[in-house]
Length: 450
View 1 (spheres, one colour):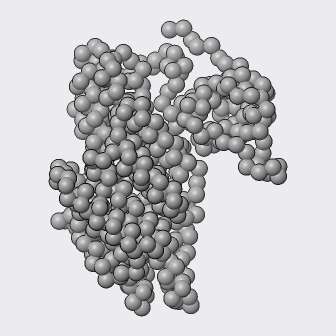
View 2 (cartoon, helix red, strand yellow):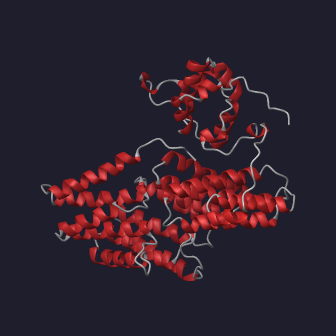
């Protein structure tokens, strides 16, 4: 295969090996990449502009240090422009959290020993993509129905593992899936097969956005959500579009952007009105209304969501992240009633959530829901003057192994405020506040965007 010619702005190996360059690439801070390329690689802004399709002066603005007193420099956030920069500077896809770029695939393939299929099946996780590859090869075509079915099964497994599986594990497996599926999109296939793979990619980007946000990767999660929405639009897939808007509503909810949240809910309803995502959208609306103190809107939203839920068939796999199970409704009502100050109802729903989230052997099968339920019980206890119970519940919630950091911290902040306002002189209140702040400080760290 002919080797692809380098671009005028291809970064030299010694530049790509620098820790500061890799950190900037991982965070999609391409202005910093441009600045470092000029300093350490003698790559001019004119060459970069020629390679990525920007004007030279715009490259200069993006490369301007943020500390020069002229404000925050522009950022590249559109997915297609990110790809243009990565390709123009010949940045290997894995450094930016992407699948290998087409020009990378021109390199000679490394020979590897075939793995035992039984071992791959036993592994699960990354092995599911290897199984799909073996199935594809059995029919000697770019893609076939068996491989497509295997991919869908892999995505289903990941979505069903979301409530309890380690976030780092899910992140790695989802990235493996994205790399595998996007690579398959480069092969020969029918229009129907192309759409099926495109839809699979959309579901993986949705799951990726959720896991990234759980891990505190806000910017990366936004990129994955936007990619899923774009794929939903291209494939004409209303449910994927609706879930992308549901994720945006969740982001806005945890960031206290109430109007953005309500706009996302309406956009989600417009995209799809037949699947269970609509139930989640009503629930988000109720939770936002509770935080705005609108009790009537809370009850209207909960009634509408309950009515939609009652019309849906009972799911075969209620643990699937993109299928709303009836048991989750207690979780939504718990959140809304806590915010409205109806502690008795909130506590009753909290106990129900913990019971449902615990298996017969005592193992928590939905630890994230259980953690927020304990925080709710903590808020109710604090309001009733039971500080020891409040601290105990709050501490146990923060110690959960599986966390959705933005959601957990949103409710933990409520308990923290209750404790500090009601018991400002208690050492236990100060200790709990420090626990919350420690988690917040630990959540602020650079991460690979994908």
